Length: 311
Ligand code: MLT
Image (cartoon, rainbow, N blue to C red; front, top):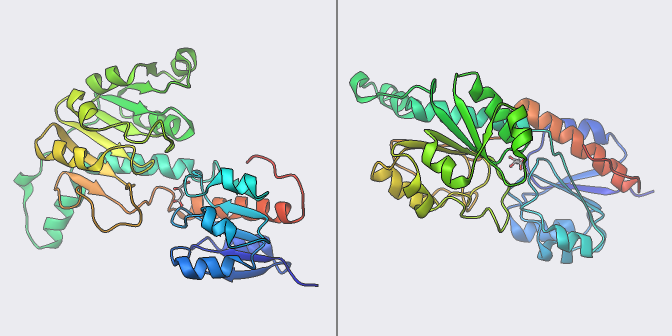
């Protein structure tokens, strides 16, 4: 009997193969190589991706066999779910696999930006002792604005609270009562901008959230605010943020995600007060292990025609 074909289009943790065992034929392709992906998906029963592979109508139309697309992570913005539904293809993800890692990376970016760690590191690596050039700000005693109080936003807020901060949040889908239980004051986006010394974004990318923080919002923020985005590119307008950093309205920014990915160009690159990483929020051994195990289990169930429970 022929084995179902599972196509892995990005680097995933070895835990995926451990779950699959010998019952499936596993093939690999570079999901960013469009012609190769379209050719390889034709024979695939399952397709596994992270965030770099665009699973759009063209991909779905290149296959009649595909039964399940698995996203080894939280966000589904690189998978055209309505097209999958239209074609009877199941979409599964690993919604809690990397939430701790994402929250920790946002904290790392905030601290690195507040103390200019990468720029200071670069000077010393260059054999220059520039102690007086770097002067950071403390997090203690400050107001931290969390935009989006979902699972990751809450984990981030809990970690920042340990620094002795006041946490305020904007999230139209969370009640003031729930926020109060978490020790967080719920405010409007406008108020959050006006009051926060640090702002961290924890939203999915949707038509409503795209471009949420642009020139107008940055102008309303406290002068010198530090902005962190480890959620999705395009939520903060990169050009507007770069302009605001250059004129001092924004004191610094820690950015993990970009409107186009992968990218080697952004108006934010080259600014000393901006710390950038190439979408590493979920890139930890633990998160990748969990994501791999979770989606591999779901793919197995989907290929057996079983019900796939929410993670
Ligand atoms: C996610 O949506 O969970 C992350 O972006 C996953 C990833 O980094 O691949």
